[in-house]
Length: 325
Image 1 (tube, rainbow, N blue to C red):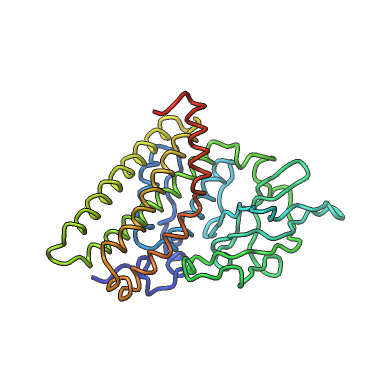
Image 2: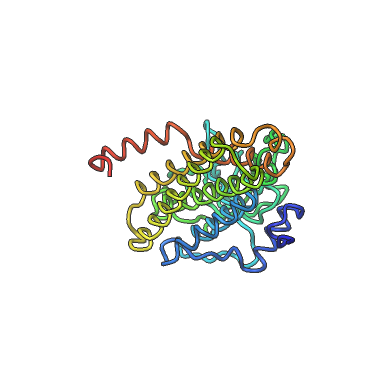
């Protein structure tokens, strides 16, 4: 059976993403509005099919949710990204006003969809703290650096550093006040949507691996399969429980629950990345380009989780909450 165009990896990611946008397939339920489970299941399904596509779709749907939380509608037919990374002192800042005009200037790293999205929500330094600004992504104001991503992993997600060169920012382009982006209830919940994509990617990788198993798998292959299936089922249930909790208390503090889910899913992804190659051996790994691409994509995508630093932060939060659940 031929997959639909939005799932077929023979069709470029940007075309599939535009197809999804035009068909309303990216109009997911907003977080905390009663259908968070369906929202995350849709994101997981995209991750299962194609991680690069899912990365861009997740960014767009997160941007729409952020705008909704600020009481602002997204522009119809517009593809959005959320560009919030500021590692190592990098990032764009607001300068001005100069002759009555404030401008965005500087480099933002890890901008997924650098050539593909129409607008981006960018975290920018300002005189009173960091703010979120909604700006167009078009030359000459926004210039992606083609040499800033040097791995084939997740290459289709078009994640590059973007140089903003004095892009005008009006008062209406500022979304929320200083600190609003990270202080809002939806900030933590958005991290659950990312975890759902990781979960879907791991499930899709295992599903593809199963197609390479012999008719009578050996005991070691069966052990890997059984353990991964159990772990994926457990984290899938954990995400469903968390989504229900978010819907029951949309304005509550879900940071601890999201951190637990993200750490659990990250562990499952690491196990999947480790066990699938051991389960299959060199033949499928060298002969199945889609399998190899998914292994590479998932390995770098899950590094949005900061490993032991995030585990340590979770441990501190658990102690602050009175101990393990």
